[in-house]
Length: 280
Image (cartoon, rainbow, N blue to C red; front, top):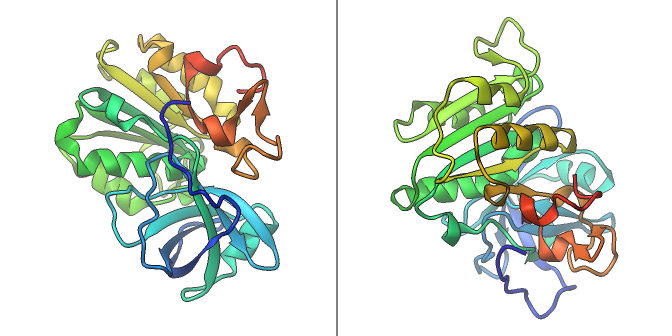
């Protein structure tokens, strides 16, 4: 809905990709780096997704975790929660998967240029936000103030602690992290991600766009927190990728009234979907 997307004419035939790198992140999440066997770039935009198939098992929609500024391969952060994602987790470097896409409409990168950006990444919402975050950092001069709020349940659930540590050291990024439940290993903020809005961090509401991705239960609270600091509904952007299945608006699994999330989203401005009961 936010931007036009070019889709390959052959929607149903997957390209073959090879896993060039597999990294264990936590007990449930891994990062997979994929190279297409035809040598071409995936050609995605931040916020888009691909359908990943494990032959003989099935396929699942997976958000792309890497920026299109990364050339030669792309990355997928995947939590093992079902048949397909559990099968993907059993694959190793050198194994092949099917890739359809990229699909959907991603983040409006051109409209974000010059604006201050507040990233709010909760749990595995970090994966799709990472595609835009890295894009913004690679083109840092094109954007205003960058603030990152990052939250997980526990310190051991932090997906990419090294990346977070690097972000916290940058002078051109305001980085704040929290965990819901602290332990002896965690010396940072303890509390839900919305508590980071209470840290007396100054925003220019007229210039700021908040981009929020996380578990469904988080959205209404994070949206309310963004509204409380003055960010208008039009400048609150969400990704609703959790509802998708076929990726091409045929199965109806992601349908909300007359909107197909996989085709018109998964990225939406809040003012576009706030009156749709199924959206949040």
